Length: 358
Picture (cartoon, rainbow, N blue to C red):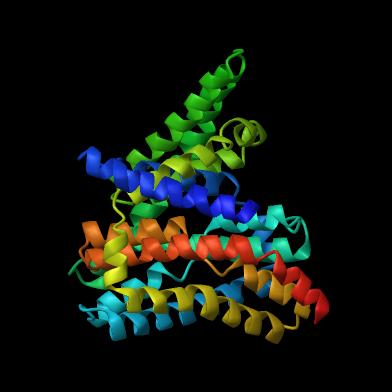
């Protein structure tokens, strides 16, 4: 009953967005909610979490992402109508990363977040998040017709300057402003100041350094997470992340076409197979090859059998801004994300039982 209600909630928000899109022609900007989600990822990002499980998380995530990208590209080549190799690769990249929000929620509900399994899965996600951030940053350079060498060099210089600028402003300006605001009795004012810095650094990254707004939001969250205000920001601002996720699903649902996904059911079915079956199987094999116990391998692999918000962001950006994917492909990815999130939440409770039996 619990997982049925979760499915109905996700489905309800998505179709509420679709209905709202029919009634109100002005779409809610999903990018804004994506920025806030990435800010939350940066706020919870810690290098030490990755270093603690780097021997498993780094090679495992890289192998799993490469395999998922290849299988996703093959699925789009076989069942997509516009199957140029660049389009196929872009489609595969969109489905090779799992959802941070869903994975942490599923592990938390099963009391595994603070276990070795949870630490491995979170470190795995950190690698995927870093990959996604790099994709968002380098995508304009890769897709542009410029020579890759000078373009990548220029992008690297701009990104270095952006990191230094955000670090300087975060230590000097953000620290002083939040110190002043924290002395007031208004918790709402502190939360508002945090959100202003998140969106402000996102705009700075886009307008001042030709980087993605998502990368700027991630950097602002990471700088704030290393400050003495990290715990208060986590307690005051991050509970709003659930509201951001709700609005994000609504905004995504405003662009979701259920009948359009049914028209490309072969591609949707193949994509579901890659996200829900291929990814966890490859993750399980890699973890076992690296010498970890069967129970850890099964529990970690099971938590990765879904795609979520980063797939939405990548697919929307590639389809609408760079026109490297047709609209139906982004719509299929949205539908597959809804299906895999629901199945992952409903079926993961059986994974620990199966691992104990084996």
